[in-house]
Image (cartoon, rainbow, N blue to C red; front, side):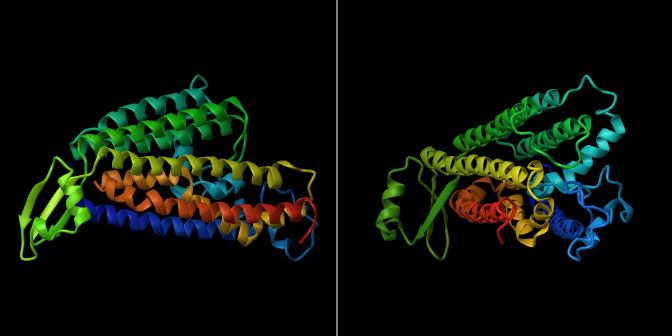
Amino acid sequence: MMWPSSQASKILSALLFLVLVYCICMDTFLFLRIQNYKIDLFDVPENWTESSTRSAVRNYEDVIWVPCSINPICHPTVKGLMVDHINHYIYAPLCSMLDIGLKISEKLLFLTPNMISFSHVIIACIGAKLLTCQNLAARRLAIVLFQIRMFLDDLDGHVARERKHIKGERSEVGTLGYWVDGLCDMLGVIAMIVGILLYLKNNPPRRGYKGTSVNTLPYHQLKEINSSEDIEKDHTTEIGISYKTKVTFHRIIQVLGLFSGQMVLSSLAWNRYIDIYQELLENSTEYDIMRRETAFRSGIFFTATGLWRVVNPHSYLHLLSMAVFCDKTWVFLKIVHYSGYLCLVIAVGSSEYLVENIRSFVVNGAG
């Protein structure tokens, strides 16, 4: 290990708490910023006097002390409301600062966004190899590499937007960069899953059963133990004898496959709703601008998009990374391989309901 597990747990717990508090505060600031200040997406006339939008003509840039060049809540967009907390509130400002320092967007023109995308695939392959190691320090180093990969995944999008002078997070669906970024992201995720699969295959987790003797165990447990080639007496206690058996490779594939299925469904749904919301609220200028702005500012829309901050594929990867770093990979996979689908159903159901309401309000003028 890199350091004693008890010390690592304390440090990680403290960092997790600080990140959680920071993200909650940033979500609050983002909501207040949307409610009270002008949004670039909607060009509200300066002489507009309706009370519900009177405060919206104020510029957010006039009241902040953190410049918009590194401020993640300065230019709210549909995608910006649906990007996970770590990428949006931590990696995005770091990408901006790195770009300002190295002037990647302005001077290093040979370094294209697609080159950055391909580079993080290479890093993911190195990380996947380290994930197969039995040594926990090597697996922790792999997680550091995968976090660098996710940072670079943010950087390629940032550089592309800066060179096109696009403010805020956007998905340019159908462009070459969109498909290259998606492909490289998918390859990076596959590399991580394969690395974890090979590690669990070579180091299968164990499950135990307790009883006063083998004869006192329930039949289904006895059958499972007796069918395994690896039965061992772990220790004897006042309660009785604890037996442990390795989890089968078939079970490992099943659990990891269910988690991978969540990743695929989450990615498809997340991109689908970004595309739909962008089309309704950002791209379709023929729709009434005040209705689009009202829908964008609504608390219901903020809450519904906030669900995707938690269940989008990047959030899953951050949680999986933390589990691997803490050496709790199997525990995490067992917890979410079914429950994660319930979260997806809630997010999809809420989004479908909201899409129909927004479409009726913005397109048809109902509501």
